[in-house]
Length: 471
Image (spheres, rainbow, N blue to C red):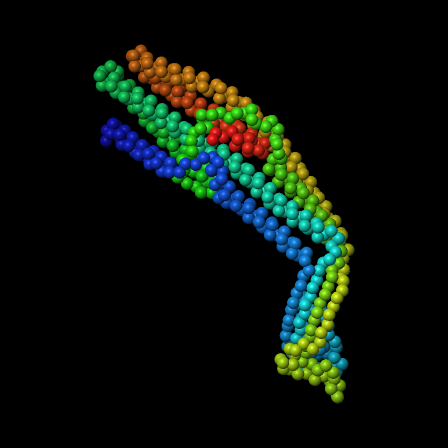
């Protein structure tokens, strides 16, 4: 295959790939606000944080129910020996109050059926502050889940905005490299005409062909990078796909109005709110630990019935008649009720909770220092972001001068080359300089938007950035 035929095949393959990819990618247009909405709805981590909020709310409702009186109902039928006792019973976790008696007719291990049924109501009426401490703990756990979600949402929105700006940047690079390819092809047409007419040496044609091939490779490389960043952007929405086209390149037509930025953060940073709530939750946990060492007073009420296959009174010989049949033991024959107050206090808990409370206090102190560390880091980031904005502004002011000078140099070099006053090496060098200046111009504008995003992220207020987005 000749070199010319190879170039033709290569060109067809390159532009077929670009055309197919472009046709596929432009099926759905999407703006930054739409990307943010999709990410908030679909991203798995954010959905996980929402599920955590619902779980905390359900835990709080379960805690409320635990403060209500606890009632239990039980029934049992047992077959067992009755040696010196009027039939067996099982306490069923405290639902049966032990009521029974010892037989007086000596030892007899003959088995019989017994039955029992009871209703027990138990309410911890006085807890000396433990109930309120647990309520506060549950309420702060819900608040912690909410601020954790808000922090994750904020950080994810920053990631989405950054990925969007980077994708825009590489999309702009594709357009700039296509423009550079058009210039190289125009130069190739001129040199072909000149060399075929004998006005230029053959090397000029070879150089122009090499420049076209290099420009095509740059188009392919920039397109590959643009697709990679588009895939990363859509991954942040929870639905990775190349079936999207960024809405427009208006970010390059309008610079942000930095006068609208707040000089001081208007609210506490989401990351600091998480740590602040952790401290409050730690104090609530400490209160619960202290309250656990205090006594509790409960009201107790129970109604119970017992049945037995053993006769109620002794026979003439002083023994009790034992009926082993099931029907004799199932009917309830004796009924009792119990009403009263129970108080429970374990003084030894004071020694254990003393150290548990001390450990919890140190955890709170650790959270305080984490808060101070994060606050220091955010202040440093905010100051650094301000410096980045100043530098980006200076770059934006300087880059048009570079671009204008490169355009003039390219126009002059092309005119001199077409007039036969200069060689092709000078023209290709100025073309490369122009391409670099175009890329630098795009990077400068994009860099100012990214510096504004960094400032908004450091201040914890994404509205500083979102209000500047062109509609």
